[in-house]
Image (cartoon, rainbow, N blue to C red):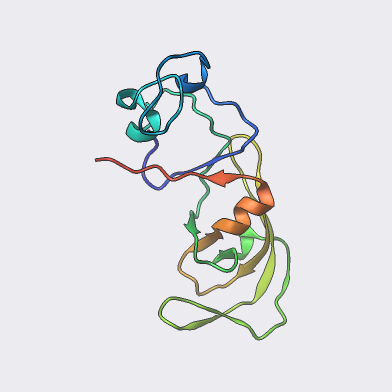
Length: 157
């Protein structure tokens, strides 16, 4: 099971090593995920993956400063100009409006890549906002531009 705060991104063209796919002729069907090859008592989707399991995982993003996944964001946003390559001045007077209603100044835009375990994730049209408290990843744009999906697993204590 991954640690809290880690993001797992899976590309659709990878094959899974989960037992549910190991035998298409298995008589067992999980009542939780409706997949053949296991039962709900041993379902990884329900109980989480063991730490030594090599599950279908294409990318693990782990870069400092961390990037926060934001499904409500309208753009990728960074607070560190060093994150951007091909940065250029932002000439519009637009502001980035945050949750408290405050408008933050956008000074640059550009692109960047986040290293991962398989291939880099490319981010285009990233806004540099020096006063933002956290780097933000716009979930929809991240998925569409990199042909990945994001799956969230419940964390059990």
